[in-house]
Structures are given as C-alpha cells and as structure tokens.
Amino acid sequence: MGKEKVLRFLKALVLSFVDVLRKGFMYHSGALTYHFILSVAPLSLVLLNLLSLLPAVDPEKLRDFLMHVTPDYASKVVGELLEFRQKGKETSLLALLLSYFFSVGFVKQLGRSFAFVTEGLMGAKGEIFYWIFMPALLLVTVLVIFATLSLSIFLKFVLPLKVSLLLEVFYVTPIAVVSYLIYRSFAQKKKEDFVFTGASLTVAILFYLLQLAFSWYVVNIFSRNLLYGSLTTLIAFLLWVNFNFLILLLGARIIYRFKMLK
Image (cartoon, rainbow, N blue to C red):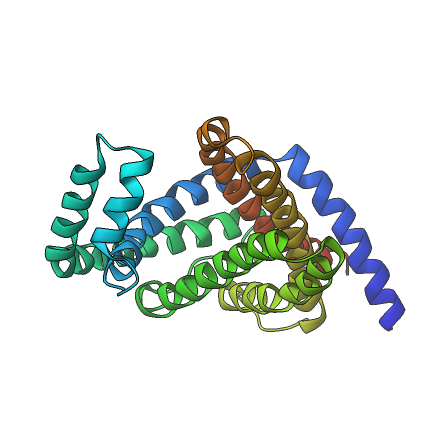
C-alpha cells in the first residue's frame, strides 16, 4: 500500500508540473505577488522604525559615514531619519493597520487561487478565518521565509561553501511545516495526510533550490556591482516571490492530482 501511494504521488507530481506549463497558474501567482507586496510593504515601515530606534543606529555615526560616501546628502539623510524617529509611533500604527488590511486581501486571493488549481478541492473559507487566523499564519510565513533567506545569504559570505550548504538543508523543515499548515487550513476535507506531507516537502525543497538561486545572485552579482546589481535586484526579487507562489500552487495541484488518481 505504501509503494502504491509513492508511485501515485510521483505520477501526480509529473502531471502537476505539466499542468503548471499548460494552465494559467502564472496569472494567479502574479496576483498573489501583487497582494503580497501590498501587505508586506507597510510592514517594512514598521521594521525600519524599529531599526531606527536601536541604540546602534547613532545619527552622528551615520552622518560621519555618509560624509565619506555622499557628503552632499549626509545632513539631509540624517535629518529625515530623526524626523522619522519622531513620527515613528504614528507611522508604525498606520503601517500595521494597512498591512493587516492588505494581508486579508492576500489570503482571500490565496483561497481563490487554491480553488482554481484544485478545482474546488481547496479554497474559500469564512470571514473569521480570513480576518483572524490566516493573517497570523501569513506573518509567521513571511518571517520564516525572509529569515531563512537572510541567514542563507549571510552564511554564504562568512562560511565555506560546503558548510553553508550543509546548514541550509535544515531550512527545509520550517518551510515544509508552514506549507503543510497552509494546505491543511484551506483543505475542504481533512483526509489523506500522506499527500499533504509529500506536497509540503516537495514545495519546501523547491523553495530551497529557488532560494539558493536568488542568494547566489545577491552574492555574485549584487555585491560585485552595486550600481548594476541594485537596478536588477528589485526585478530578481519580484521574480523570486512570483516563482515561490507558483511553487505553492504547484503543491496544491499535487494534492488535487493525487486525489483524482484514485
């Protein structure tokens, strides 16, 4: 029975990859990217405000550093930082409210995308689900993904290649757990635990490979040419987010295909 499930899962995986190429999954991954940016952008203001409040961020030291880099704009940048500190509480509160509002829209779009790729097997939920449970899960997801990506890039700078790759293998686990929770949350029927676990592990491994590609770009392109790298990093980041959501939809399609192969 276990061998039959594995073979069925592998067949579902192949069929799902074909479906990604043939069907309009890219439209939904693009819509998810748009809603994701809307929800994360205000949250970044909160993080910037928290960073500006740290004792290590000394305006005088920052001014001295900027005087060597951009002497014409040093005083202006420090002045804006001090003004940002003064208005930080109001800005952070407004940013949190905006991020929460847009995150609900993102979760609803995620439900519609899941409903499309699974043909109704996963999808719509009640309003309480959208306004209370999923925004918290979304925040955890964002923190996990960006923490693992940042740590991956940092390790590539400070550790030998073989050691950093060995450590990155362990990052698959938290991403797999988050993916599993997302799929379970949107599933209409709580059965077939095998396929949810398999789809989550597949998604986590693909996330990891995509993360390696993006971190390689940052290390080898951005760090070597700041002018050219900064112009293309935004595009690379948007593509990275888009393909991450495409992989997430692929996992949902695997679950659908697995159930249809009975």
